[in-house]
Every structure is written in structure tokens, then in C-alpha cells.
Length: 258
Image (cartoon, rainbow, N blue to C red; front, side, top):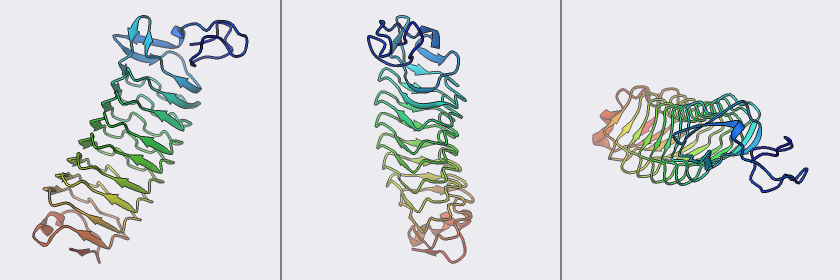
């Protein structure tokens, strides 16, 4: 909703808090096509994406819908939305808060890439897949909660999240993509789910703070250079008969394998 005189926009409410006039639908700021919403013109500050516009229920945030909006600080996504498109919020460098509802099942490729001010992300337990590069380069991201609904963490999904310190991978995840946590320099703690089957190439490359990792017996493949550059890694729990999985993983010298 917006004030007809332009005092405020992108907020819920019946009357403008500045002038008292009735708020009107914010149709000028969005384009909607078959339930897919995109911004029309740059937005800033805090916005609440509407659940319905022009008599259309909003079900998807379109590809590049808010890409490059440098002054966008907070976004609330309505519970009508099922998917967040590719590059939807890429390059929103001031975005510090994002509310993702339980209706969302897919976070697309590069959806939040280079959202440098994001510090914490709570992924709802409806999400099945985290797309490639979804949170790539989120420099201030310190904590991410991955729910027990996610089955796939895409390639480079959290690469270069330089402030990320710990991650717990739930039992539902079966695949960690190539470079998924590459260059997460402060990542010191990682818990892997017991049904994980594959760890991609370079998945933990240059995680220089990682000291130990326990790989479940369900894992069938570990990609090349998975632990390359993990210079402080000292201990890998994997089981004697499965050590061959680490042959191409570029395990640093001095690592004890149990």
C-alpha cells in the first residue's frame, strides 16, 4: 500500500501515518504476470511484498525481481509465495533482514548473492532445495539454519560467506554441491547429516578455521579438492575401510583419519 500523496509506500495500513489519507494499492511499483511479481522501478528501505495485486494471488518472486536495489534494507515475503526466483535479490547490498515464509519450497540460483549485510537467515522447513550460489558472497552472514526439509545444497551456495562460523546439515540433505562452503574462512564447526551421500568438489576448500569433521558412513563420493587449503584441519572421522574416498579430496598433510 502507498500514500496517494507519496508520503510512504510499500507498507501495510489503512491510512497514511503522515497525512491521514486512505492508502491505495501499490500497483505502480510492481508488475504481475500469472502470479509472478517483479519490481517496477527501484525501491528502498523496508518493503512488504503484497500477497495479492490486481486480483492476482502472488505465488512467485520473479527472476531478478529486486536485483541490484542497493538501498533495500528489509523484505517481508507473504505466505502466498512458493518460490524465490533466480537472482531475485542479488546485489541488494544493504539488505539486512529477510522474512521467508513456510510456503516457500525453492530458493533459486543466486537469489541472495552478494547481499553483503545479511547476518542471519532462517530457511523455513518447507524449502526442499537451496539453489546454486543462493547466498554466495554474503559477507556478514554469521548464522544459517538449514531445516530438515532441504535435500540439496547447490553448488557454491554459501561460498565466500566470510563470517559464517558454524553450520549444521540436517539428515534430510543427501548432496552438498561443488564449492558449497568454499572460502568460508571462519567456519570452524560443521555437522553432516547421517544420510548424506555426496560431498562435491571443493565443497570446503579454503575453510582455514575448520579443525575436524565427521563424515557419515552413508557418503559414497567425495569430490576432488574437497578439503584443499583447510590448513588447520587435523582430524577426519570416516572409518578405516572408507579411507579411499579421501584419495582425491586433497586432505592437508598431518591430518589424522579415524
